[in-house]
Image 1 (spheres, rainbow, N blue to C red):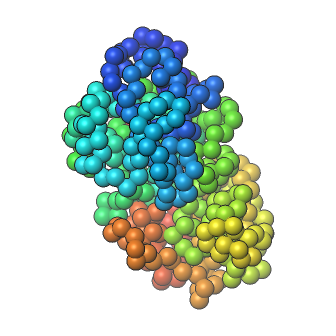
Image 2 (cartoon, rainbow, N blue to C red; image 1 turned 45 degrees about the horizontal axis):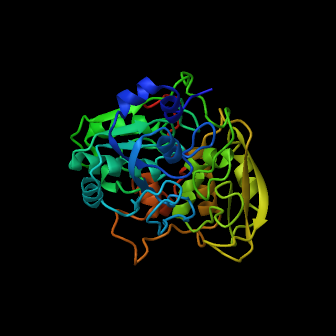
Length: 383
């Protein structure tokens, strides 16, 4: 069973002394970054005498109560008594100012990841890495296994013109990397103007096979409000793309991203998906009524994904099949979401940023078959 870096630090005083020493430490984390014994990383480090001075929280907030695109108005963490910096929507310059003002000597990063490029926690890490570089603060990433595995990748890379908070580094949608490997990639490619070599990664132990973890090695800790199950993490690289369309991705239900639909879908939809004979997944017709988000309070017709074989399942290809089938069967009802008028200026529209370019949107607009856009490969992208 894989051993996360935080657990290695807790059990190896020599490693802890070499990595942290007597430094005054800032920690990028939230409540879902826990030890094997379910102790929060912040609490565990404070308990063993690490000189924590400041906590930095990602999207969803330190306690993880914020929905997508939200955070928390939390200034202090009650358990540790430490001040909290909400990093969400802070640029690198403002983060660097907070780091410099705090007087920290070292920035530690311990966040869960789910192996999908448009998941925001890695980019919180990268923004903090850029800020630390500007503030002259070295960074140590406490690594964790990629929970959907580190051997398979799927989907296109990122066009730099569409870089955003749902993608800073040119990696596939399902990238097969850990946060530490993403950090090294960012430094190697100079993402965000990075110049530093003051990055260290405490690696995961006993993960040579790069198998999914903790899905096969322990209970699932929900990393954000809409990723409640291991199966959610596996489907998210594909059905997360649904966010960029007027299909519901199941937010407001108990199985978000495993459930997809729209009020205007009809009885052709699920049979059409079954006819594609996609590997490792079965489709079940459903009706649901979201409590919030798209189509809140309406009866929605759609599909539930049941992953039957995680090795054969290809989430990006499956997500494209769902989107493409809805667009083909309902060309007058299906739509790609436009950029909200009150949103901060960002490249393209939501689907462009999720996909990493405008290619998918343009193909859907032209009525092209998009399933083959997944560009599936069984090779691992290495940092």
